[in-house]
Length: 112
Image (tube, rainbow, N blue to C red; front, top):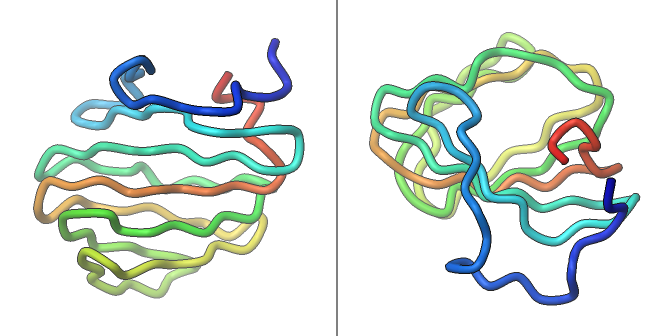
């Protein structure tokens, strides 16, 4: 398993992986301490509620999402963001097709 990405990531040279129905992800830059992932959602797709030990900060690059973190729900649109502390349950529903930019610390080895 690679423990760091190439220095540059060119979108049309990176593969998209199916994460769940209507959800695809593209692994961007990472090393052992940090990872950035682009996640593309179709309208109505669900980011299944889950937990992980990583800290996560995410940006809504496009679209509209209903995001639930530790029982609190907000509707977020392009330009908004959110933070998830380690082990907090979180998930989302895509209200308008869009893209999230997720960052994790440390990197998500389970994505590689």
